[in-house]
Length: 324
Ligand SMILES: [Zn+2]
Image (tube, rainbow, N blue to C red):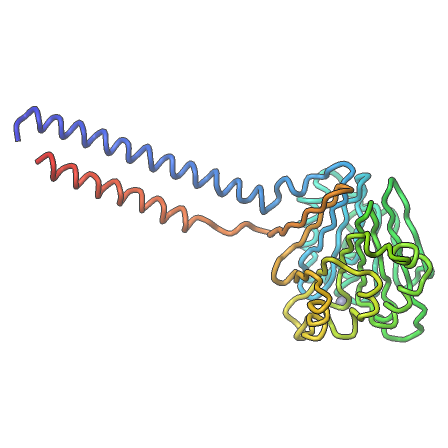
């Protein structure tokens, strides 16, 4: 190899190595940006910013339990059930990072019934946040209604005198424009029957109005077969059902899931989808899923990084062979 060719080869090699280094830096940059954007999108990103005049309802994944948080169109926040003690840190973290990053006030707290997988988290909320109105399933009257700024929250209590707390569970509706959320706690068939025969529920769904609404049902009692009667589904005609469920007690029941399937209701489980968020702007509805932590993409980016280096090396070897 002559000296000129050798120098040309060395400078060419340096150029190639330099390009490899730049490419690697670029890949690392993409990795960092990708991870950041991924977190922003799926983690605590812009989905969780409060949008004025929007209603966002969050079905927080609290394993076997219920925790539903509503960001209301006027900026207020309602929490319906708070999950069990075990999930309090998760719920608190969710509220602090995604719902109330700036101040510690929860405007409405509603406990459907006094079972620990619904009540415990609310006791922590009372101890941690300033709570506006607290509606307790144990003590509340048969009916309560909060109407503000084009949205309405209604709380229904059945007539059951049963000692079964599930049957005494409150059923909560949130209405905004043509969107309705029906949150049933652990209510069983009797409580559902009381609900659909109440004048206020008839005012929402009766006389064909159910067909004109987009209704989301938080399925009762974690998908147990004691809830989600066909007469409830016939009455409210839900488009989407959310089952707040963990891995205990073989729930949801295959019977309940079969009924929802037969009624062609799109059904999601918090156990599978993690936190489920539905946002309505009065016209359109968007539904998305959130994770506590974004998946760690380090391994994927590492493979890409090594692949780039190997490709550069193979290319360099080819170049060396041709020049020599
Ligand atoms: Zn429960």
